[in-house]
Length: 475
Image (cartoon, rainbow, N blue to C red; front, side, top):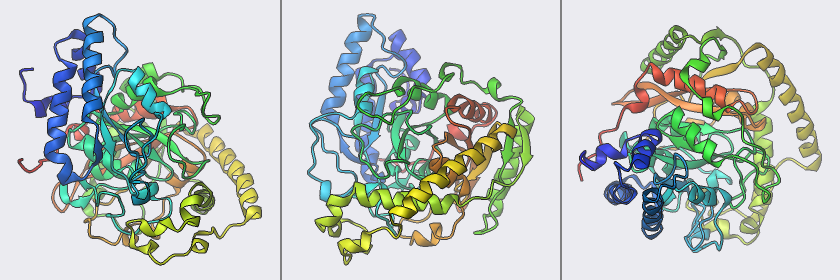
């Protein structure tokens, strides 16, 4: 390995896979480089809850032996990765980011962890998240078992929630890819704040067996990496039906044909920047430049209004109702008082009861069906939705997050999660103070992951934002 280890670890999944398969790069050396960088930077970023060094070395040695014997499992074979600490790992703590589960050690791997092993990936560790993936609410960035996770672009600023560690670790070059989860914004938000590419797949495309339940009808798992191409490779390796997860579905078609050229000529409904809260002039300029870049690259842009519907109210109702059930044991035993967010200290179990009743829930299910039909008609006119993604710079870790999120409209994010649609977040430029990433997102109809990833690949084929690296302080 002739190049500096830090340089190597910013390599994408596809390039690392090529070199590992050709045996010009050793899985064991790559693993050690990753563990060395994690040891140097993870404590300052607070992006890892548990470093699985022993398992990583075991995975790497097995990958090296298999590749030496001519057995290649696919593009993840020998590639380091991390998983959000709500995916079960056999014999390794899975804390769900919350103090009440600090001693929880599962007996079985989650299906996706098993599939990572079967694909030959090297598990470096369990990544930070907002406690319970934000399921019972939070107000501060330090609402996590190991404190506030930082974006590597500014260690005084938050990496976003709830897949904080997944985004931070990828952005800092600690792992080439990671798995996160999203119920509403938990992949797209940290992708924006850390300047990485994050994919929220269609509901059911990735198995949730062995993953913490928050909202049964909205939870989704997804890859976070440096590029749309890398996300496509990870998704293709892990997607597909799982007999242990009755909500799982077949892999979406076309993942082997994700490419920039496939997006040229697609019609994109452009949802403009929000009026309130106002975005900075630098962010507005980055957005306008991104639109011009995409148009010149061959995407057909048409500014429009997103369909009016109570997207946010419905998504909130489902999350609150389903979280109260999924986390019922924690609530009823009063262990919520152990949570890091200070708002839980004086709450009683009755304080977590959802405002919606059973009748409201059934009505909401019927309305969800109407929302899906509205979007189906919308996608008869457009191939994609193109919208800003958290067009504000990451806040300081000391910030009151209510000031950032309360009252901020997010109809695209709410609709996408409510209706189970695929979306991909990509960096679109930088804003101030300092050099801080801001992002955009593409969203498409169900099972059109290849379409949204190709649109993201088109943007990334003519820009360099996804290749930019933060300047981390020297060790």
